[in-house]
Image 1 (cartoon, rainbow, N blue to C red):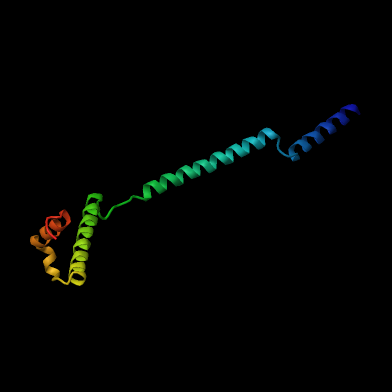
Image 2 (cartoon, rainbow, N blue to C red):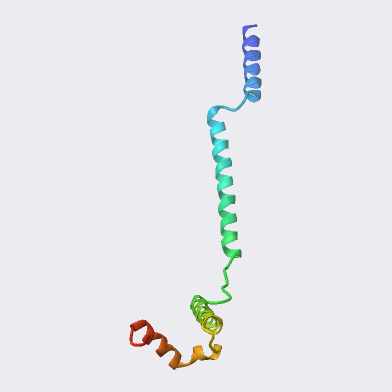
Length: 113
């Protein structure tokens, strides 16, 4: 009778163990596995993003710098033409003549008044 009682207790404990929640070690293992899987997925996504996205510049940097400098020069010339013609009551084309600029620099240096 004691054998039957011990056997039934052992069977009940086996059943309880199978239905009991996981031990902390196995929970830790599952968390670690989950984290490792998420990390692998992130790494795969990053490599896909890196391989899929390639930046192609339409204009190289040296061309951009040249374009900006030429636009600044053009705007400065147009501004000088507008200023000389409206404020100075002169002809807009006179801004491009060398004599006009030598006259302006002479006034700045104090050679002419």
